[in-house]
Length: 352
Ligand SMILES: NC(=O)c1ccc[n+]([C@@H]2O[C@H](COP(=O)([O-])OP(=O)(O)OC[C@H]3O[C@@H](n4cnc5c(N)ncnc54)[C@H](OP(=O)(O)O)[C@@H]3O)[C@@H](O)[C@H]2O)c1
Image 1 (tube, rainbow, N blue to C red):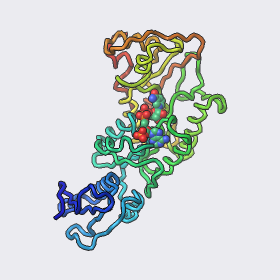
Image 2 (cartoon, rainbow, N blue to C red):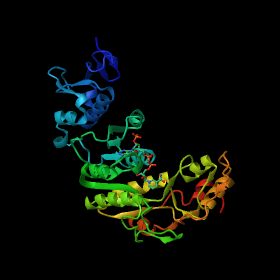
Image 3 (spheres, protein in one colour):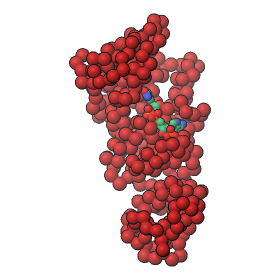
Image 4 (cartoon, rainbow, N blue to C red):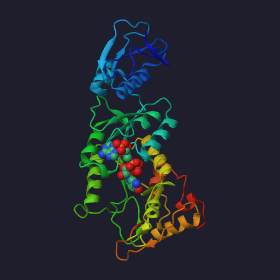
């Protein structure tokens, strides 16, 4: 007698990994085939099991079988995913569904109820968390037999030896319809005297800094694929960002008068979603709150807010480079976007 699990019947207990057969019972098959296939996909990947899908909604005889060990590719091949419209017109692939990527997923789903969101990661460490919030996880390098209308790359350069290769892979996952967006950094803008900077300011020439070289090469790959680039200022939320880093350290060997540019994670996500929805091609946009602050001002505001238990002792640097003051009025006009948190000061609820 099969062991029942909601709308799904197990023919043997999940402890016997590799051999059990999953049967979709009749009422489950009344779901739209798209949802059915993708739910099945998530389950089969998560449980590394052998899956049996009934060939018709009314009969469990003559099942179509496939092994989930061959992952998404085989599954989709069997289901004829690429040609049968398995990918919905608003489905989204997030490469790097971390803090920003998950917020993008949430906002995207609010805008497009019923769409499927996929997330590609380096490890399986957060796959259970991703499944819980409705993101279909896969590992980087897993061959996906179909492309997506919307792709956003939100993975930092720090966890890979081939960031440009990873961005190229993401570009290949885009089907050219909706939009492909790469979240870059404002670091490439060539300004280190606390001067003004906007979307059109010149960038650091190749060869001056390995960090900006990687970003500029990745951006080039994106633009050549007709994707878009969003250069982001420093991302923050209450428990993440430069202020948290400095609070943990207590002191920092950098100069206090260096100007920083910030954008709240929620705002970076809403801007990303707004850009995706515009279906721009080959554009470079800038994400910042237009309220640059010196490092010292940031930490003074943190102290004044009374929201943090740790105490920051101070900045000790004197000769390291200064920063820049970013302004993204052009991006705001073109995208029709405004931040929910107009400044770090406003976010902390303190007066200037
Ligand atoms: N933080 C900032 O101040 C700042 C400033 C400007 C721009 N940005 C950009 O903003 C984006 C989002 O930042 P975030 O703070 O949200 O990132 P995050 O939370 O650190 O992102 C981590 C996620 O990315 C995955 N990941 C890491 N490297 C990957 C790779 N090479 N390929 C595929 N997945 C990868 C991780 O997989 P696992 O689950 O396996 O760990 C995890 O899901 C990044 O592109 C970053 O460069 C950040």
